[in-house]
Length: 405
Image 1 (tube, rainbow, N blue to C red):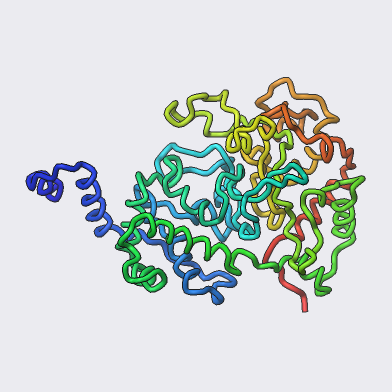
Image 2: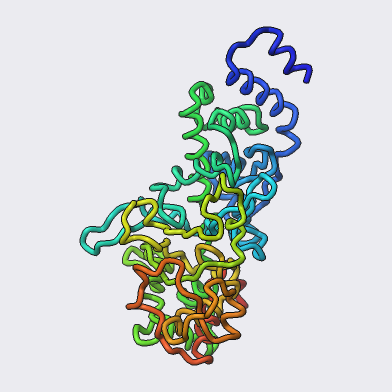
């Protein structure tokens, strides 16, 4: 309070300047106390100087307002860069009671996504970041959570830059971007995003050390069930999963990424447990009637409504819940949905949970009924054993496999 009264007594006319000065003082008091420790992760020994800076930014819990939330809060390395609370369908923000409308996707292997573009030959949008592609590049994606009122809730980029300006790693920032790196707020904010993107492009996020990787290298053997699962996964007349999740190395030798980076409406139901429905009208005017139109909302094209980015299946067994709204809590439920979505009847209640739908042998109607993909899934008619085999194969895509010598 002393500082606030002092500013007023000196007759500062600009309320914005007053706010900025107060913000700097608060940060000077708290910044060192709230910066989170950076864990030692596989691949971190290969970080460039810029990526080392990005690592500091990624784990800094001071970069929210109030302090307490970092990039790593919703993309925790211990849970393969998704939200560590997998009991919640969507992630909580730094402000009490605020939760987003979507499930936080993993950042593992995200750096391989191409810049968002429209493929005229195939009539498809490809690449980009976020589940709706609204950020063209990895750096563009890194800027948005800082200013999202439901996520890190900073009022402006000036606030974020000043938090970095007084951080313990400020000298590293100037070493990477120059001694005058903080002189221009816009340039400094772009540099923050650039450094985070450099970290997300590092080996920490692309390990390629799953059992499947060792299998492809001839250093691990599959069980009979895993072999059957892989065959079903790739068979266009069975699972047909590889149509959107390519499972073979690319022509340039890049290991399979298990995504084609396109967008699809899978007919996923609304999630009755989505906490976003209960947010105040200021954040969700539609209440429980809210419909997430995905890519269509970003492109403003009705033909893209209900479509979300095809995720990589790497680490899929460890990154529940699944789908854009966290509807599915089990991987087996996802595969069963792919298999019999169009075979089973609609549930009477459109707000039926996965567990109740599985028990009742029905599926709720899609959240967005138009543009549903009927060509590649929904009527696969897999047996119980075949579903189990595919799930067994998906478990081989988890990073950190230890080869038995």
